[in-house]
Image (cartoon, rainbow, N blue to C red; front, side):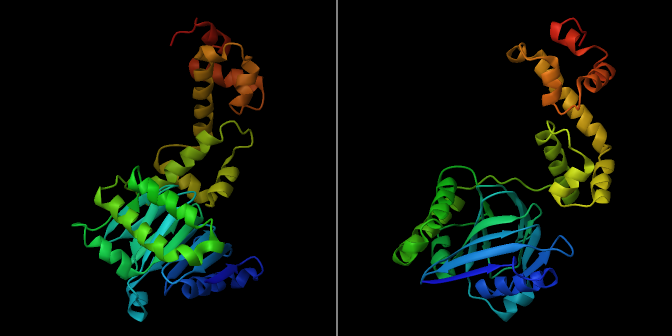
Length: 315
């Protein structure tokens, strides 16, 4: 069994991405990584290899990995990548089709064909590098081209669990890698043969808009939620944030306020929260103080929070 470990942590910032590109190409085959955070990069990669299968754990900040015609021309071995998405999302493009992978999905790409995988929220995956002859032998049983993203239930879920479990037994990998390669291939083919439902990605602009709105919904309780906070967590510029919202006819502050007010109205109308003080509800919805909350609530709903709770406000 062979093992390797790469990390940019001890590398000078200006040299990190060049170091990372070398790590990727030495671990796999000619790929073309691309950084999305200009001037800064961070990542680590740990791999183990047996006679039949290579497994690696990869983590980076926002980035892209590509396989181009040039790279294929310089080296190809027919292998496939089966990447288990541990966290975040990835936009996958191969064979002229784009699909969106969520946490728990498996991204399956053929390295004999160009592909692009975009990790705008950072890369956090377990990658199985499967020799092409093993998987292609199984894929002959499938009449159509396999999906690039395997998700859902049944064999897809089982394949995800199996791949995750393999990464937890590095000390025994030598004893099981031939069996594991066959079983993983069989699971992947079964998952693609029954058909999987994948979520087609929106345009890049729409995808980013959804991420912004999701962050606002997830962080509405946080009184420090601001445009600066959102840019930091989404790893985008302030101008990019405002441009995406403006195109959708929104502003950041208005969206945050409306989301908080709508959430507070739901809680005031819910009998389960009848014993919860109005001040506590306002705090839970991210308002700095009850006075600010009361003023905003009256302006939005033309009634006081207490009146809405009592059921006397006209809806």
